[in-house]
Amino acid sequence: GAVVSQHPSWVICKSGTSVKIECRSLDFQATTMFWYRQFPKQSLMLMATSNEGSKATYEQGVEKDKFLINHASLTLSTLTVTSAHPEDSSFYICSARDGGSRTDTQYFGPGTRLTVL
Amino acid sequence: GNSVTQMEGPVTLSEEAFLTINCTYTATGYPSLFWYVQYPGEGLQLLLKATKADDKGSNKGFEATYRKETTSFHLEKGSVQVSDSAVYFCALSGGTSYGKLTFGQGTILTVHP
Image (tube, rainbow over all chains, first blue to last red):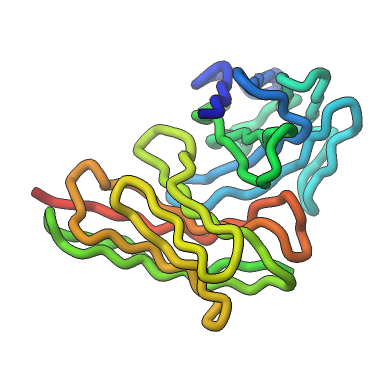
């Protein structure tokens, strides 16, 4: 089945620093990737939609200068949390849609736990 | 816009009990419906899906039927196991937001031996 990986699985950083999270589709080409944020015991909140070779589309209320998304290839998207603050601490999850599939199924990565001190 | 409503949890059951987690949706057109499961500390895994009315998705003993007349996609399992303890999310894709998933709030399931 389709596999999506994320790196790192967890990261701790100091306030004011930037953190980059990678999302890779391992066995398929992902024309579209999605980035979600999940707070403890809550549902997933879609942050942005990332299309290969074009600018990401951000959901209302998500700061695009704060959360930089790059989708440089069909297998890699990155999320950079710039000038991180403690309120950015969360579980970040990416998903990818198989561009070669006729279905709209999304495959999820295992998530990245970000803790900002 | 699209929306998904799940029954509130947490749900606590004994092993071998019958499970139902209700899910209803609002969407225009013909959305695809999904159940995802999230085990502790992990990302989401697709459990099952249905892409058109009256389709039944099934996997690992779980089933859900796409009911357009009642706009529902309830998750059922005849006999739960301790290993089924997880958070279950109902979701839809399509309607007014093609390609984007709209999630329900999630239902925590705990199964005791």
